[in-house]
Image (cartoon, rainbow, N blue to C red; front, side, top):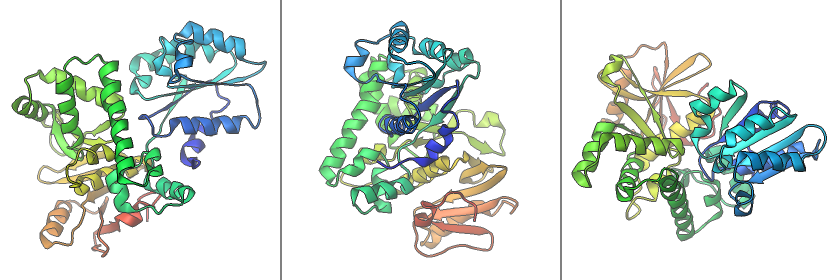
Length: 395
């Protein structure tokens, strides 16, 4: 497995800190591998290391609450600073109490989990700032290129647009094996985990909502619009139930929502948000007859890549037209429009039109899968294949 240096570089300076290191993200995105890489680096200077993976039934059946965890560490640690690694720690009862206690006794605590409640207001309030958090994503394209070299396979942009970046799926070369793996992953992450974790009783309703939302990636949605669709096509339910289900998807890092940035009053947009899948595979495995939604997946990929680069993202709406992203980092902003192709004249005019009413104080960028360069005097065109290998939007 490749060394994910971007994340390791962010975490290294905290190796010896008494701050709790929270490494979080969707299941199977590579958190455990990063934890293993951190352990290997620490073992170069210390053998006082404890690692527990709570997805291992032998461990969770023995250490299932905070008191048992503290007792185990006290029994097994050596003299001096102990480095404690707790994988999928949210599976034990009162895990936050154990973490708060362990960090007070010359321990460096690292925890991973697949639930954003690791960063819940209650937990962070109790920690009073005594933590640092790092979100891990599935592979971006640059990482796919690196891992493909290890596997002796040839990566392609179109493969990424369809099947996304879950690391393990790259090890399967046949369509059957890959889709089987991704469907099993989907059943585990999206369906079984959430239904069991939140004790969802309306299972059919939840599955219908999940399918609708994950096939609606890169689109502006509202709770009311989703409610109307579900009520008209499936079964009656309250809008609060649907909002709760959407929150569950977000808490498990299955989707991310970004708010519109608009010249309109905020009150006009308060029920609207744009939804992106954590990985485009969630859309593709729901497509029929290989009719993959490359247009929306491409925008979703750009969102994931820009997030990986560290940009804060909003949808921009000037009242007449929408621009996919206003991306900001380090005091610099960019308008970013995304399209699969602008070769067709009507599509070209449609995608460039939103830029017309904007001044040039913020750089304007359009990203497409075209081979030709469509840059103008005011808009920079970036080919997708080039964008995927960039470290930032800076020229």
